Image 1: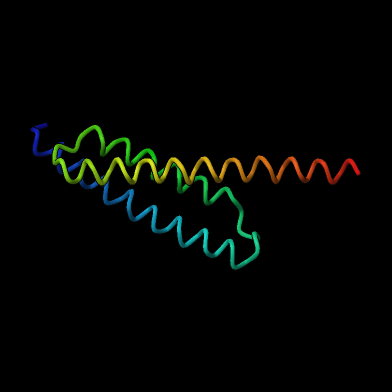
Image 2: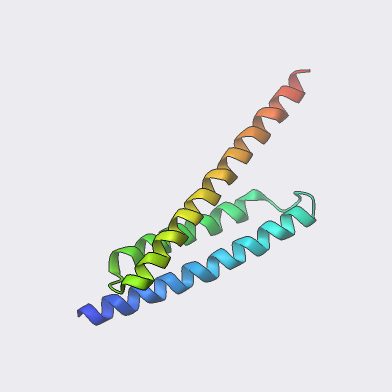
Length: 101
């Protein structure tokens, strides 16, 4: 593969990750509107896919502007994933506490 192929692959992966993030935001809005009846598994799978795509694009992108946008989107995706995992953890703990009483 040439360097140009890597740049194209990195840019393609970045655009896929951005589209995935948009789907995650829509899924989150749907989950809020349906009062949490949408399973968190869909949300987590989409976040992990976006994170993997961003990691792939970070390794292969050569353009500075795209790389800067990737870093920002990567940290945003990681932060959303951490918040989702923490919310699942706390909801599981609260469910266990309610069962005990």
